[in-house]
Length: 256
Length: 289
Image 1 (spheres, rainbow over the protein chains, first blue to last red):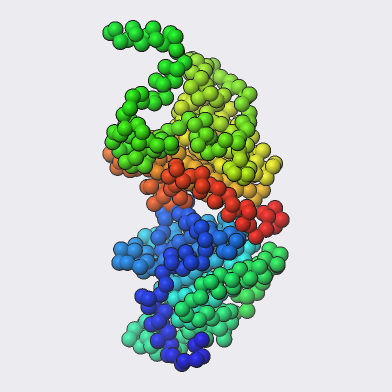
Image 2: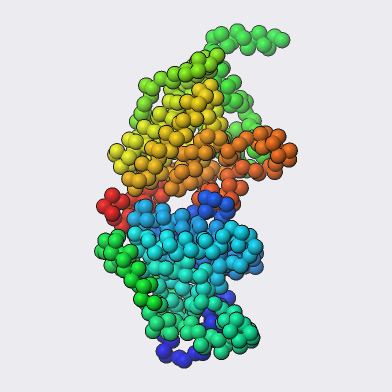
């Protein structure tokens, strides 16, 4: 884990953003069997930056929601390099409510620079979409576990990470803003991003200390092991009554 | 016009058979034409599922034919309900009788209990050959009862929609079916039960504006026409020509209304898989929560 080799925060950011990160589709395929992707927010559009659907984790069905950066140029442009649009979050909300109705736990996989800052996105209520995604997750009566496996960019990531457990991979980051944005706002100089990264405490180790995440998974990811870990964690969480589960999640975020 | 006389004579003997053929527009002979891509092909290439070999469009099916494609184990419900003629609309009862003869149904939907390899489901199949699958009072009644029975016996519902919309000949009584069926769908959902809809060609008007868009999982057949207002009405209103793929299943998916587009030959397997994922692979039964 990160303790073994001391890497700078800027290096962590670099690795989190690496193009060599596993593609979400490949991860889903290895994690779940019979994954069926469900499309659309039932309102205006279908966002390719958010993949959602149901599949089998070992022998039980789960709902999975993941951000997607895409692996080729065309895909990356279509997903804005993994930045979801409001209708992506609305699709996520729809699928989470469906999961609740049918007593399925939810897994979210996160690797996004943040929600997409675009004109159409603003017009469609990007803020509102993220807000109701968070609100839906905080009230969800089924277990939710999130895995940040690359960038965890601000509200765009939090919208899918208001969960019972948040796990991170060794080379990932989770922050209020990109180090570049942080430096440019506070010091009016985006070039001081490495310095900003150090200050922000966005590394997995720092976040584990702060209690923002529960676990750091070594990379390359052992997906067979992850499958087993998710399965036992869901079993543990299902032992709680739905009300106790929501209360526990409330307290998890109340402490900050 | 000798052919016409011959036709007349022949029809006297076999009225039903001929009417059936004529009204359902099943092309005779060995060449078929796809209404979507207009390619013509030898009938044997049609396969067992009545799908265009060129573009994958699924031809319209009678409810009974679709039922045969899905399963052999099925019990029909409410076959004894009789459609009334609330407006005493001229020619309506004759039209009904003709439709009943063609489709062998009492109304534009077949409902019943079906087994998909031991999985019990409440199944509904709308018939586009029954006055364009329009939503009459008894159609609504059969559908409402389908959902009510499913709620009572804790069964999932699978519904195939195909409809031109409300039944004009029944006026406002037809419109009321939209709210009636929707209310039954709501209760089914509140009981934590699964509702899968399969939108087939064509699903339009009042059916789209109610139970076709209320399912937990929405599947569509490739190239199916799905929309609310008809193409002609829209074109006349906005004075613009609409693109060819307007209101297609594929377009609808882009606009966020369809979960999956599944070709007819994979449909049965897909439905079984979705049923399993919601039932036998569940963490705990829905009603225990």
